Image (cartoon, rainbow, N blue to C red):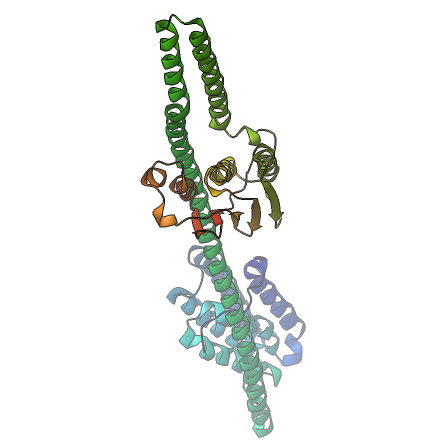
Length: 416
């Protein structure tokens, strides 16, 4: 048997219950004193024992407030109260109203090894009261006493077992709830840490993106605008050194054409410096417009598709995927000689997948020129963009069979 208490009574019963039972026993004993043959000495003894019981209960209440649960002092007080109840019941069986308190407190007040002895002693007192008082007179009453004692102990054992099972279930439930609380706390901590890591990752992605845009803009200025300006200077030098008006006009015209071309390149670079397509639209609409504009500009058939439930993505995620599409389309128009391009944006649970396919000439990914692979503006540039937000980029291509790019990034929602 385990030392488990039955479901706790209300706190108020622990304070006034024993007093109420004692008063009930006193009233019942007073009304039945003549019926059971109590003499003057028995009445005086009962009064003294009742006073002792009241003092004992006051003392016990103070002990329990300081130290709830089983204790050595509580054990002594329990058996002392049993002795008072037994003596009172001996004097008048109706004092069993007070003695029955032992049934309700044994499981809470006694250590495990003394629970059954305490209940057994209380059952003896109750059995003596139920057969008319102690001591039973004659074999019939003694037989009745033992039968009632056996029945009392049987009922006590059954109800005690039920209480133990209920307490076991309550303890398991409490442990489960506590474990669930700890698990939820750990999960919340992990979610908080994950959110913090996402925030840190996006900050790093923003900083790295700024550096990438600077390098990209520097490369574009060097490859387009700077070369155009160099050509303009060369044409103007010819104009300055030739006395032939016709030749001068020809070179001035070339210089003007180079200037217009350089101005267009400058405007394109500024336009691509920031993802202005995301200023007013979400990622799906921005990609749709980007693909449509590219289609009109190049004359290549292009289709855009969205699958899954559309989510409002974090700015860095949207900007990264938009840049990857812009770079992939730029590569397709420059190198692929494709007649058809397909772009698919898929929302798949906790990640976003961007697929770009073309039917162009294809290539060997391992044979990409070193400048494109390391300069930050080709395949490695797109791969770096994806990896900065904990994503990945895969490339499948073969000469004559087209190219397929697939970028997978975490689905980070915009919490604003």
